[in-house]
Image (cartoon, rainbow, N blue to C red):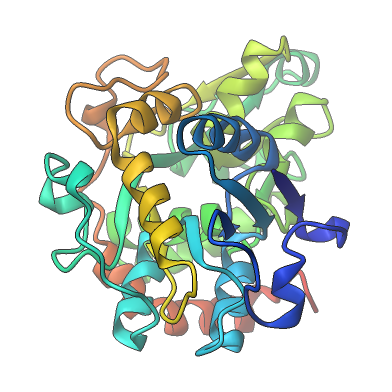
Length: 333
């Protein structure tokens, strides 16, 4: 197993550097946007169950999707294990994926998979607000309960959030706000929020880490990034905004043209199996197969999830991101 963060620029997908996979049929080269530690757990379980050798290259959602678009049609990996549903919809439109009807996914609800087997959603995650309770107390700050609260001037410079140009976590939040508030009010909200943001990050997990370390009082991030750090002993709480939160499926797919179809099918079958879902439930709040509970620490979580429109988010992403960059700039500039 090799699990490599893109920033490390070492090992990982050695085959990818050559623009294709020359690996043996038992080796699968995989792209992911999931965190390295999370993927280590998932990959170790998968390798033990399947006998496959799985190589992982981790990039953020936006960076990973940009790589896929640039490589097409000669993809540098066999499959994707972890990416936004909105990018899966884009990939279907671009004909980037190889269809495969996996028998282990039969009882996963239709809402969580492509009808032609071009992608499958194995788990889903949501945005929330990370709070450092020590910093809040020391600075006499009020606990926020809503997205709207984050525009309060008391939080000026105390908020950290990811850049939607590089982070799927951030784009989920931006598209969620626009769906909850409407576009006019939503963009007005971002203007006010920006006044309080002390830093934008590339990664959707980094705000949770920096809030945990006490560098910021509040962070916009995703669920497991906060709950993992709470379990590690950081002085943190998770706030699910009262307006509700959007959620994204985390999806898998097979790249068109892979020379390792048999091995990829075996891995996709495993991810959708009972054993694969049990493994996923150890690291994710919610998994898609009925009868399996994730490790969520939130009661009645479904009450907080809005009817998030991933199709709308996909169809409007270019326009939304152009307006964001024109208004707020980009972390890469």
